[in-house]
Amino acid sequence: MESQLLEIIQNLSLKVEALYADIERTNTHQEHTMDMQEQDFDPYAKTRAPQVEIEAYPELMDAIPNMEEDFFRSPLTDEERKEIIYGQEKFAGMKYQPPPLNDAAAPAVKKVDSMLYSIQSSLALITRPLDQ
Image (cartoon, rainbow, N blue to C red; front, top):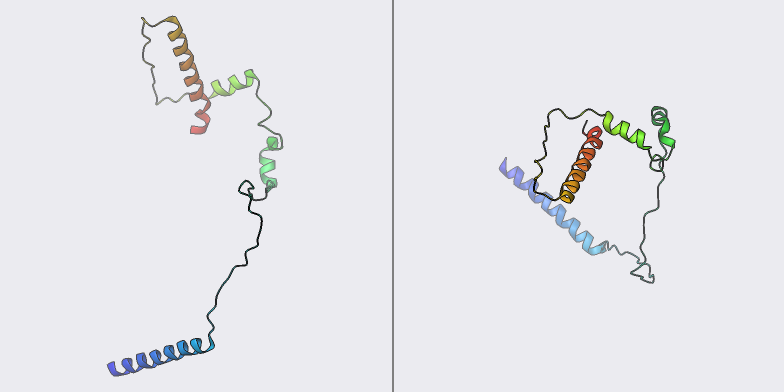
């Protein structure tokens, strides 16, 4: 059995050598060259991909009827904004108490600190819908 395997391997080796010889004889090495177009190179000219416009699915338009409006350019009134911000439930698991104010701090420092606290609270309430 080993002699049969050796004979098969030798036959395959001879065939591979014959193929290599045939390739060398016909010189069919494929050389790929790219034709480069000579253009005036401008380092300040940038090539960008063309802009693609995607149409919304009809089912999506049916589900969200206000999608055709430019909602980035239609700002909310103060009343609507307050309704959205304060209408969300507060996160019950988080009990944050800001550190007490230093009584010896100047009134300006206390005012800035309370402003920062109100901004922080507003941000927490605004991002609450994103957490759900």
